[in-house]
Length: 168
Length: 292
Image (cartoon, rainbow over all chains, first blue to last red; front, side, top):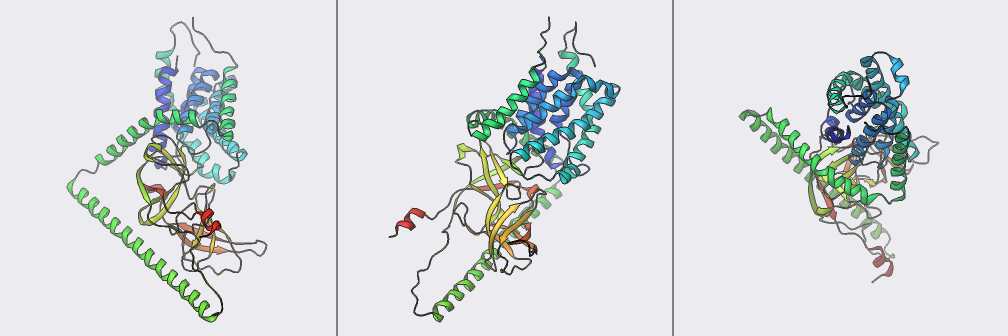
């Protein structure tokens, strides 16, 4: 089961996001490591596993957030699920669709996060959020997606049963 | 044979995530959240320590260390001077206010008076903590500190840094960690007053991560550069914690109140250690109502 190594990877990613990446500003923003991993795993292993990784990663992110518990869990589960949909295969070869889906998934994930925040009564400035946070994050996740892919494919090959499993 | 989970699984997980949100809103999720936080906090503290040590590896030469030491000493001296300066200005403002009151008493000799403070405050009992992480949600301004319920930290306690500058308030606590809602969080509201003019208002965070002082009465005269501090109205915070400095004031005739843009007293991105005020003398409203 992919979660045997998925849980420590996602936990480590969430903690790194909180203690390290939050202090790093690249192109005015910062990458979303956990979101990137959930999207990549969804593309590699399909919608179900993408959703599971999004769910687990979301729980860790929620634990490291002062906001309402469940905001990240909901957003990342949805993004992991979307990344594993069959229509994503129409976006092109694996690396291209991975890069495109990383950027698109980041924008969708942030959109869901902002939508949830708005429903919960937070004041949300959509234009500024897209310009200063979601946009740079999508670009950075787009650039980092080949690294995440290489890293997770290595685990995928070790966790996949020899007689079957989802193809890339 | 490999067992495939059904197509319903993602929908169940999405439903569970929504259930989390609903349970949090209903206030019945805290025990499970605390348990999960208990698991994650040692991991976060460990990684935070490793990153801190790795960050220091590059600065190993003697000169760099000496310079670092000097900078730290100067920063400490600077913080002490800022605090002293603030206190002197506070005494000056208080003195002027008392003089005005005295003039009023002298002008109205037939009145009877009883002197009183709005809210009493004094030395607090502090709990020192290190900032170990920041919020994973980029739209919220929270920091995570390595002091939790086992250190006596509880929700609502004010958090300060050097120079009596207010950082925020404790929003959530687990056993080992606490989540501090920074004053520039859009959900944050702090009863504030201006040090020189004694004008009161409410300091709020903006979605852009800045500060604004709202609810300033239209006839009040507010100057740029005035220090904004906590007013202690409501009794939730001690009086006199520095919040920032007025940059500009706007007032549209269609608005009921003036609004000031406030420059924060601290750089929220560079917080390393903070103090949690776990207790401070408060006014007992029941005693006041009952009288002597």
